[in-house]
Image: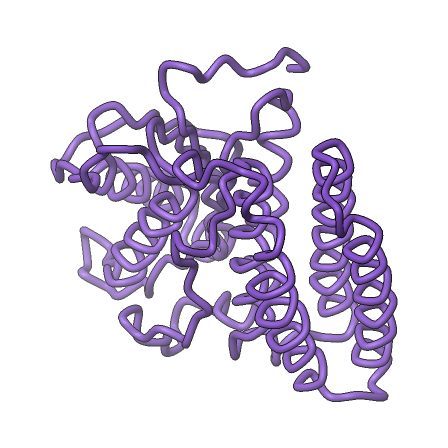
Length: 307
């Protein structure tokens, strides 16, 4: 699947990958018949929350993929949250005995297509975000008989706003992705991770920051940005400090709060929302990724259907 994606007719194009966190528990404890019913329920709930032209398909044993045309990343994330809440809100019962089987928990990763990337790269990014969400919510995958967090409960998020967009589509998409991963680090679920799992999430954050800095530098250099060298130096300093703080947190020499403070104050507030604004004039703000001129808010038709 190395071909390039042609998404001109459905731009912007987003992808959601949904993983059923505790599906194996249903299979092991209640048998494959119940497992099949759980899969059908998940598929039905996903379809019920999608629009008519969204494409929902089985992606793996306990995973689904949702192709969401004409939808930027922010709206795709909102769709994912609606699906997560709808599935978590339903308590499952055995039909014959009405025995409570608990609730199904899911993790969702989202990505917005970047012009010129391959289908493999597009899917891989969504899969990475799903993995990050799964690691950060590992404490939710309890046995089905235990109490589950209220699905309407929301942790405080760093919310993306379109005023943060510079107008270069890939830079804006990467910034939104960093906001999403930052919210994983800021959320309470990550505190339950063991050191090895925490290290994986932190490494994912660092790799995303490094990839973004590398791309942004290439764009600014090609555009002849007069503060390019200063901006590149800022990136180098941030990456070095990020690596030092992250290694100290993973090794237990610093608290998770140190990483959160650095992520919010230095990376998000200090750099993405302050330093980056100096190059906004290089791009056409009306072309910002995730915004379409004259496009009305998306209205999603709700209906019941099966795959």
